[in-house]
Image 1 (cartoon, rainbow, N blue to C red):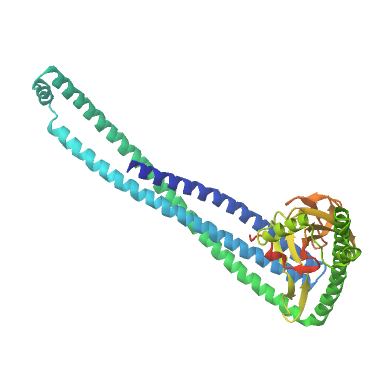
Image 2 (spheres, rainbow, N blue to C red; image 1 turned 180 degrees about the horizontal axis):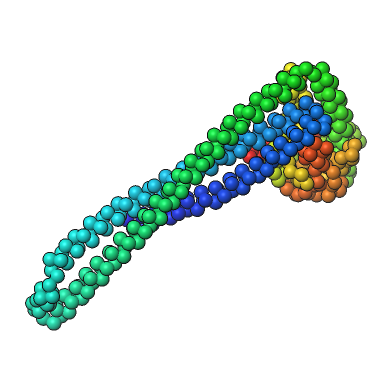
Length: 417
């Protein structure tokens, strides 16, 4: 019984400690979100004053709404954790009340019995009526133990009462904090409604310039296609180089049995002809689909893979050959799996790094600086370079995964957050 009570107590203490730690983490996250929201508000004001770009206004407004939604979710988590704490605290209060009631009843019964046998004469007679010295000694010890036990009961009642008072004060504080969080949550929801109304106003004003937006998307797509074509060229070159090495290795290993036709077939293949070692790497990479680390330490998906609808004109689409991930200013791109750096190319005023994993390639674009070189063997989470922050203050990594020259959806490969 005592062991079960101790186990329950340990679980309660552990749960409370974990909740407290999580509350602190959520508070830090909330403070960070609030700072980002203030930053977006300043950006909105700056765009309104200087550029008056409706498209940019809408983009920033969308980002601000996303941050507000995250803030509401964080506050909801805090409220839920606090509710759990209140429940555990209330259980402890109920337990202490029951224990205190039993102790008081037992103590009261003991006092009544002591009162009835309070005379010195009765205690003396209890001792003198002993049949021998040993019995008298035992009776004297019993009287001492009884007195000591009564004193201990009194101290335990006092201790339980103090603990009960502390828990009641804590419960009162928790309830006040919960009311504060609920009021904060309600205000955040009202703010979100206003932000969405503001977004609708911006979207309505944007409807007047649909042709201009369509032209901007078309221009952007043309630029993206040029970059994608360059990336595809890099991949084809890497495939050709890998097959050239594979052909040379085969010819060296089996000079008598390897024919010129076999060598030509390997070298002209549009897919990587895997060596036994390359197949192992390729299979390992494939086995980790869905659990690869993110190519940035912290970040969110800014634009998904494939055809993505415009935020206002749903019939206008942008095609994305990879995954655009927005992160913090000064952040670095990191490799998602061990492999060999096959290409480091400058595209415009930015860099792209390509890493080979058997017949798969991972590509990291929009880097301002690079910290690896062609031929380097890199490991998972190793830094490849710094991500460039654009004129809008956004730090976005373009991340691709291909099987030979075929683009894959990177969001299916990286772990969920």
